[in-house]
Image (spheres, rainbow, N blue to C red):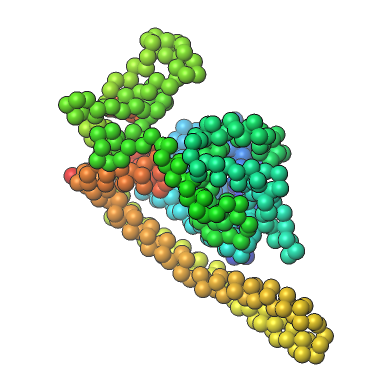
Length: 515
């Protein structure tokens, strides 16, 4: 099949480095000379994530529907930046006989590619995603800085309203209608005698509703929403931006003492058992039934053995669900002894693939990325220095205007405060340049080196230690049979597990068994 599609994706940073959309399209089109190019897909980094995913899925669907034989892109990171997208691309290669051409490296990935090329395609895919997550982390830090300066870049929580200040900065103010009800909620709950369910019922009777959105009409908050409100530190003055808690400058609805009292009541209401008690089951929150995907219940016998079994929650939504699917009145899942669950997890940990080649290749790739980022950071440093000099010159001119009485002291102080805030921001950005990526790169290699011994560390840990390790690495797993149970790892461990599966599938080489 001589048909082809071109995938052109650019980002704002790469546009300043000679990789504009036009230049990238020129290079990819030149590489595809002689092929019957059926369609060109163009995506920009500034597009929303959902939009990029939509175009990617549209491209995949077009390739399958039209039986396209070749896909041209500039490089791995221009092609995609998420491991799920790369898995989709590999299925195009294996199931639809598509050749993926990477113009920058001159590589073509197809069914006949050497296993080393397929291996490096997977590694570069993981690194592309890691780079994307690093950039996202920088964006989160920038938004956190906006919160520290008094802005709020997100939708205001219930009880507040989004607005702008005199400098057109996005801020939040208390909602005169809903704010008093939220304040009463904290104060009443902190005194005791309420559950989130009864509080939600009371707020409904008092007329509290969520603010309307373009996609959803106002509605009373449920018990889960009430718990989210009570857990949110924003109401006593701290903003939680992308997981980072930062002291904000917005008006608090409650004091921190009232908020902490509400947290204590919430904790007291939770049915939770702790390590050291007979009812603590370390794997319960990770496990799901492999037959019906219900949650898992756990119990301990008088002899001390602990078991995990399906909770049978499907009965709540459809009483006849088990009868229709399995011909029984209950889920067919058998009880799992905790020791068997423990052994299964240990087996999965042994399937995470990390060897010396992977560590070496990642280190070299990070070194190359460091050099590329260094060039970008040098340009950014020069830009910030120029802006710094311009702001300082502006301060001097304003000072002379004040001495010459061209402006009032009030005007001078207002401009000086605003300019000094800009200078503080510039100084912080200059200070962060050059060091923010170094730690992430060093930690990336250190994590890989540590993962090589994950199975050994897990097997030697007690139940509390095993639980802590799984909280870092594991999303969830299903219990069905020893061979057809399923594990879902958190990023980036899922990529390492996929790489190990690929090697085992091709029977070329697999992860070394560690004891």
